[in-house]
Length: 123
Image 1 (tube, one colour):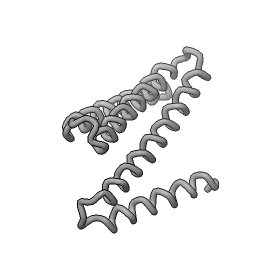
Image 2: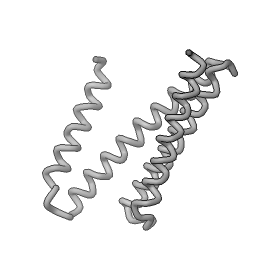
Image 3: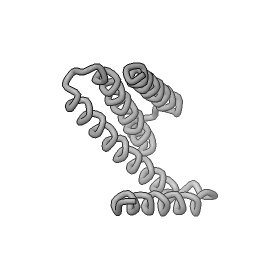
Image 4: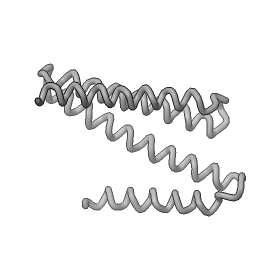
């Protein structure tokens, strides 16, 4: 395992452990831990989006390009969903959980479509 991934996993584990420590409280400590987790998720989604976009640009319109384009768009939708979740946690916008869950569902469905397109081309 490379070192940055190991550091990232250690940070995620520390955040989850701090979130468990505040499980019985509704104070700002638990909210801060939730915001850190959402921030890490946003960072990871952004990395996945950039990776999918770079693969898409390498393919230059080949048969696999449509699948990778769909994957890149799905990561962008997932990024928007997590940003909406962060705005809800910060109490900037009152969205409720339904909007974020629907956006996540759409993004996961798009991931499935992208993988299906890539699988169809490769088989």
